Length: 85
Image 1 (tube, helix red, strand yellow):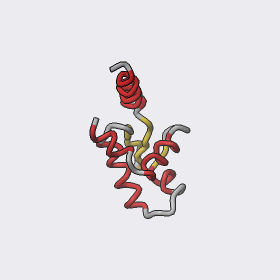
Image 2: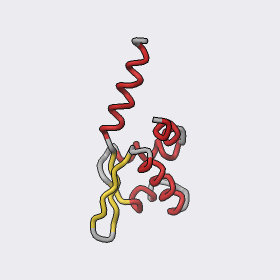
Image 3: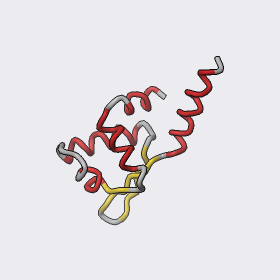
């Protein structure tokens, strides 16, 4: 869970997740929405992947990234459970 919150603590990574709400995208498609280098976007995507917030799937020469809604649901349920304590 610590990796999830660390990943969510960055504005760029939250913006990437926001883009992925529209559906799977390649790193190039994601990078097009930012004014930072492609290696920086790749770094952010790797952190999101390691936090299990995104799923990546190789399709030919491209890697598609998409939201991992399962982990997001787990985080929301955990936050909601704090209210009852």
